[in-house]
Length: 560
Image 1 (cartoon, rainbow, N blue to C red):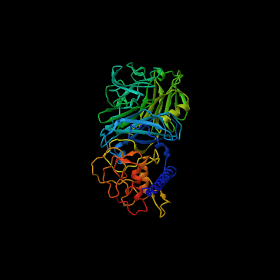
Image 2 (image 1 turned 180 degrees about the vertical axis):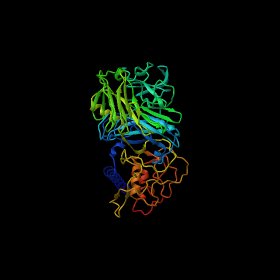
Image 3 (image 1 turned 30 degrees about the vertical axis):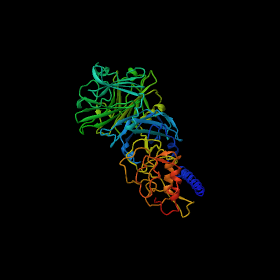
Image 4 (image 1 turned 45 degrees about the horizontal axis):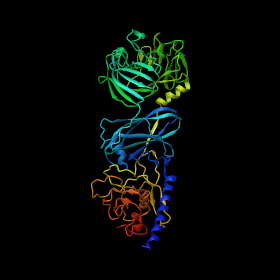
């Protein structure tokens, strides 16, 4: 034993040196995106996390909702994990470039898909708020933490930024009531249109009522279809069906439809609402109208309309031409510092007309007098309030609301400190010593292949995607729960090389990890838990005759 001790100490020194070199190389040479973001685990009660990068692009953003359709079943398959995903366990945190959590309570919502299954199809839309102001060309990093149902993590307590109440009575019509920090809205379900738009000072910018003509009954939004074609999607009518599809703390979705001919879908967020035309008869044309009263009363000399090119007119004048360039306008009240913006996402060459009717505005995308020009289902619109009448700040909010924002899903990770159930005992790479980038543009990037030269003290490390780090073992037991230490000979060549050593180092961590797969048959060279005591420590590295170091290169075989 006295003779073996110096050899063990020497091999331990080599072990620590190689681990340090591999870690340094990966950190400084292989990370496609700043890789510090994966080093800190927010809360050890959670077993899994997946990273996201949000790129503001060419536009500044303010309290921007972002969405991502995610399949956590296939995401977990990337690291050979399976289980019943618990949507109640979801948490979204924001991290900085050093991987430090700077906001552990990001408001979020998860809308399950219609065919959601926690074990086989854990799919749905994840929505969260990029809070505060984000300058253009800025990237922000987030992580979704989640776990399996066996952990019984309680559902997150999210303070609602939007409150949706179905089937309230508003002016004698069954309605959807929506409350946000910007105001309150009432949507007539049988009419398929907004009857009331209250701002935060309780001014109604639509004020539909039963008075005749422009004094009440003509008012509404979007008033999409001309009366000659049915008058659909207009408050105060009984010709449309409306169904509330989903509600949550930051988003509500509902649709209005007329049989199988017409359909629109609204997505309402805390600071704006989007509408899409999803069905329309080929033979019919339509428009999108705002017929209302800015600030509660139309003041022809004081209220103002402004186009996307910066030109404005008082509410007493008319427009009879197409909005040049981007199709958006905002209507400003003369008495308060507030505007209602209206956006048509698709540019066209149709007239976007405006005229006053003494008691209300009549603005329409693709409207000239009584003519309407829009067709088909390729039209989307956004509306919202902004507390300004000045062009630049209003423009910035408009761009924040409707310009595309890029969200990239990064890697999924499993914490080595967890005991979350996973029926797959295959070796998954978990960030223990090496640092892994928090967000990558693809889930298909594999770790580098590390191959030795003829001189074992001078390893050559070549970035490559040629070798998969996981080999599925033959199981003695059908399921294994807890931390998987994995197979020692990762590529099954019956030799221990620097590639096997690198993976051993990752699993080894600080020498305190447990191994739930101690009884798994990993083949002739065995598992990393070589003495099968359920622990991965120095005994597995330097144990006489069986330790990793005892069978390492230049030994030609690692067979026990």
